[in-house]
Length: 127
Image (cartoon, rainbow, N blue to C red; front, side, top):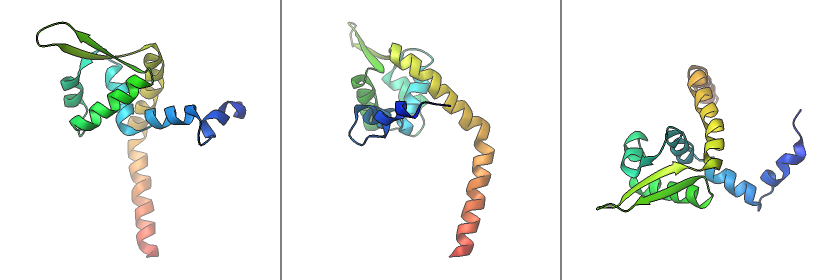
């Protein structure tokens, strides 16, 4: 059984732990972390790999993850400058959990879709 006291910092409305959970728990952050789990990548490569993300959202997501110490931005002194993003040690640790979430989503996709259809059908009948 898990120690519920360990959850207290996350459950508090104004705690830093909850703020970090908010940053890493959104869909774009999870997808960026998953993509960077395979090694350093340039912005353009991330944008191409993460279908549906726009430049502004990718920039915001990378900056938030960098601020939290999950992603590191490396600038190389070339002409033009080359910038790559890579997971930090904390980011690599987090990547293990994110990979698990992604695998869970892939394994349970059919069941989730079936549940959604059933819910929608029942909701439509109640209206």
